[in-house]
Image: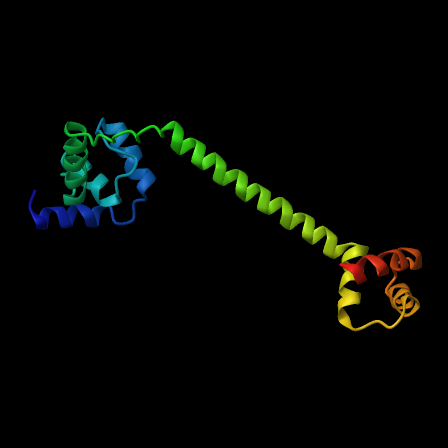
Length: 156
């Protein structure tokens, strides 16, 4: 079909929806794919069953798929680690875990009354246990706890 003839056929179906074109193809026994564009459907109808030529991109994709099927890429499996490597990884993981647990303990101490008392103690030079205990009470810490830790903090 020449370009001029094709343009005439395209004009004939200019107002026809894709669904209608698909239905017309089905009624006439013209094979088609749902993904075809209106123009492809019209070409199939104009050729009375001749499928439109695939696009260049479709041909390239098909060629690439055939190439991959013919020459599949083989992925080499990773080598199994040795016993020494696994032990070294386990030792490193244990060291990291120990460090994390120690950091958690430090954070818990810093957030609790003892941590607050240490921070308070480090803020300035305290002349008496009573002053320190009163400052702790002002911050919501039990007086007896503050007095107990006063001595511990002084000797630390």
